[in-house]
Image (tube, rainbow, N blue to C red; front, side):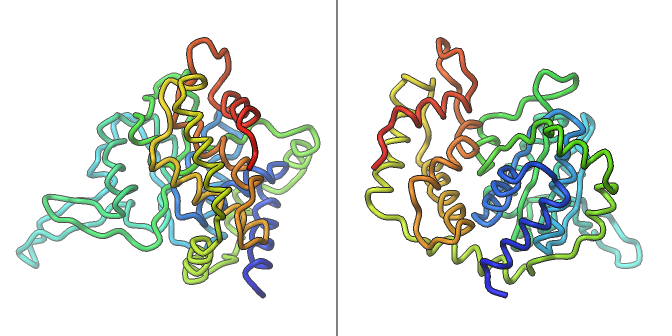
Length: 306
């Protein structure tokens, strides 16, 4: 089975668990193929945690889950050194962050201090505990879920941490047909537990290498730069995209192209991933009257294609 067939099998498997959301499932797979971290934001009960579990299983990766709460401490993530009398020494006990996939459930229920403990891990793929730097497994992904900010007991993620997520997606409520299937179907958690890995970690790393090799033509890069410049014009957003965000757009578009079976990036790939890749990094201008995603879509309409 070649890489394209394996990706199709992986998407089909995920879509049997998360019904009626093929676009969002595809975005999640593209995010992980691009080596990025994923933020899933929505109201409770629409399948955020189930999707995160299913992604981990499908990619054949070892994962751990942390339920973020107001009293969660940074050491609860990274681990602690405990004195063992038999060895007459302190022995480090690694925390749940030492996994290939960390599911940070309801990340915005934890305090800002604990949220910031993830920053080094997400950006550097390492953590510093008691003065010693320890490398995290390869690959390392954070799949975080969060509830809307207007819900009780939530702390908004700071801009610096939002910028570490390659994509933010929202599942939304299922349509009537998908909800009927959920009402009549098997328990979703049971389906996830029964899933087998479609890819091995080695195959995933090979696919990530293929993403890097996807060709980006000069006119396409001009288009991305035009979009980035539009975000900085002051017409659409209070603050424009950083160079790091521009790199993220290109990387996500490459992954989208690979999922589409192409070895080059087309404008459609950029347009398909742009709202999910940049909307969480920017604040619309005060007179816009639109949310970040709607503002990105309006900007896409205004910037000419190459």
